[in-house]
Image (cartoon, rainbow, N blue to C red):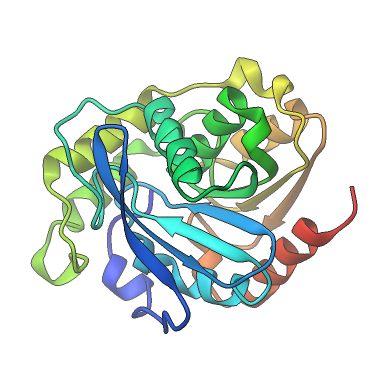
Length: 253
C-alpha cells in the first residue's frame, strides 16, 4: 500500500536535472520512465497507486551513487492504464521489457510494497536480470489489514490528494487485485541473489511476519527492522535508510 494521504506524506518532486526521461513501448502499453545519475544500474519499482514522482526523496540521494531507473507501473502515472485484469507476473514482464529497451541486461532491483512483489516475480522469472534485491515494506504475498489498503484507495481519490496524473479507479483496482492474488511463498528458496529486506517494525499492511518469512526462506538475505509502519521509508529515518541501501549495493559479495 502506498495510496492514501499521499499528498501530505510525499514531498513535492525534487530536481530532475541531468535526467533522461521519456515514453517507451513495452508489450501492450506505453511506459513512462526516468533515468538519473551514473554508476551501477538500480531499477526502482513503486507500490500500489504510486507514480514515480512520489519517490523523488529516495531517487534523488540514490542517484548520486547509482544510475537509478524509475518508472510508472502499468495503470499509474504517465504510463498506459489499460483495463484489467493485471498480474504481478505481467508487471514484472513490463520491467524486463523496459530493461531491454534501455539496454540493461542486468541491474540491482529495488521494490517497495507491491513493487517488492514485482521485484520477486522478476527475480524468479528472469534471475539473470537481477543482481541484488532490496525489498521494502513487502512480502511474498499480500497480508495484514487489507481494510487499510481499501481505505487508502478510497481516500486517494479525493481531489486534493490526487497525484498530478490521476489514476482511474479501475486501474487502481486492477493493481490491487493483482497484488492480492500473487503468492510466491513456496518459491522463495529459488532466489539466490543477495537480498536486503527492510521493514517497519509496526507495519499493519505488511506484517513483520512476512518479512521474517522471506528472510528465513531466501538463502542469502539480511533483514533489518526500522521503527515505524508501512511508510517508514519516508520518515526521519530516511537518511539512515538510504545509507544502508547504498552500502549493501556496493559491498563485496
